[in-house]
Image 1: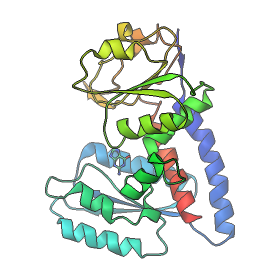
Image 2 (image 1 turned 120 degrees about the vertical axis):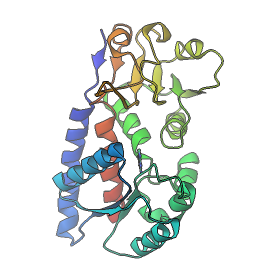
Image 3 (image 1 turned 60 degrees about the vertical axis):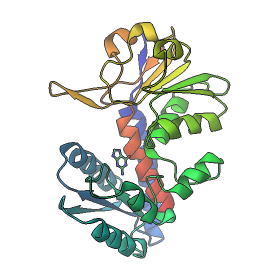
Length: 277
Ligand code: GUN
């Protein structure tokens, strides 16, 4: 039976350290501040944004939420970002994704000053991550890496299989584990034999948004399984992994909720403190 990785607890103890760092910065008259921009009324986005605000407040960080109507134009948003880029009281800028159809997501991400890019989505941040230079790392991938290290799972030389190739999770998480000397395989919707690939994983990371995609027969005995999926099924949050059966095979597994989610927000707070420094 797998050990269930308690992301909430790992996140909580990390946030205690961040709270102390915020207090130290305040002694130097620096008040770390995160500004979040939310466009439209998407319920999932609203819930994520509330979580970010609450977490920031808990560690003594200032957080400002700018809510804009779904009809906001691309140019209005770009102007707002330009203003925040030069506002010295704002250390981190996060534009909640996804954006309404009429706004070009890339343009918006490119507009954020790299030194305030606490999401780690700007091409400068992505490029630095790619070559292993210090930079803002994307929050969910970095949270996963931190969680795996915290559980003392060896990474160098192990086979990490990533299912999913999104810009936010799949692609960067593979890169972070490659930087830690893992052997990395990417799988996605066109992969010919997904089960044959996932069965080779020492560490299996799943981020596609398909409930119960990964079943016990697709997991190598004693593998570490990281479930990044957040799906609502019959009003209940579930991941991409069939938890009940896979926990019989794996050595460790993250639950949904309470696994990767709390780590994502923690890494956002970490990045904002680094930006303030
Ligand atoms: N939407 C879902 N995840 C994220 C994230 O990590 N950052 C932003 N900005 N939007 C998201």
